[in-house]
Length: 162
Image (cartoon, rainbow, N blue to C red):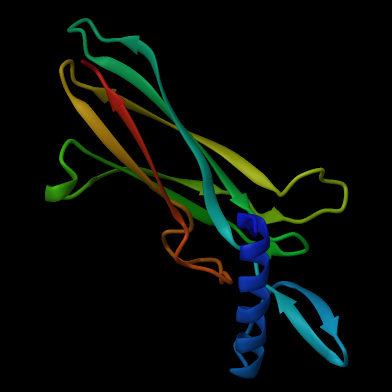
C-alpha cells in the first residue's frame, strides 16, 4: 500500500508535468527527467488538529485551544506564505461559521530538515457549556500557493463541553 506521502509526491510530479505542458507559471524547485526540467510543486495539508480545554469562563463555558499543524508534504518544493482558515458549527448540516484566519509562513524544503516543513497555528475559542462543536481547518484557503494537489487541504476536529 502506497503511503500518503508517496501518493502526494507522485501526484505532484504528474501535476508538474501537466503544468509545464500548459505553460503555467510556477515558483518551485526544479528537477530533471531526461532532458526535461520539471517544477516540483508543493502540497499543503493540515496534518493534525488538536482541540483542548484551557480553562472556563465564570459562567462555566469552556475556553479551548485549537492547534493545527500545516505541512508541505512534498520534499524539494517551496510553498510561499498562505492562510489557514478555522470555522466551527454545532450542526454541519446548516453550515459553518468563520472563526478566524492565520498566516502561515513559507514552508520550504531544506536538506537540513529531518522532516517535511511544517508550522503550528493556534486559535482560541469559547464553547458554551452543554454544546458540542465541530471545527474545519483549511490550509491555503485563499489559494495563494499553486499546489500539485488542491483537494486535500481540509481537516476536521471536534470538542464537546458536555
